[in-house]
Image 1 (tube, one colour):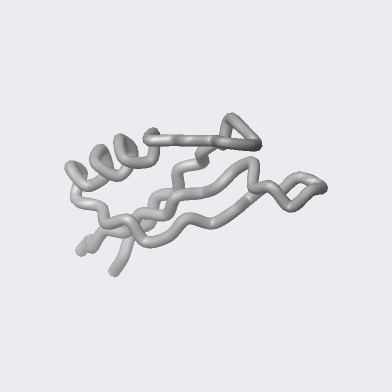
Image 2: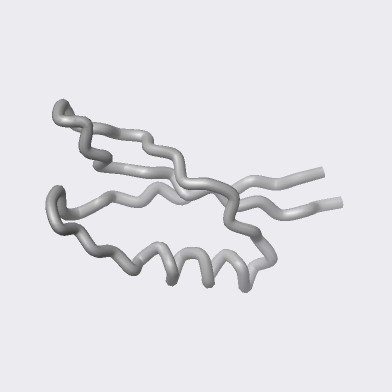
Length: 62
């Protein structure tokens, strides 16, 4: 059986955004035995710019 964790990430800047926060989040969950699966946009503004995403992590459980 699989267990999933979802981490909501707010994207701070609209233009020229550079984020390295995702690396820290992925490393933290890897230490807990999770594997990064996908990044799903959860909020998009009227101009089509992604504002929020959910990072999806998966782990095998018995």
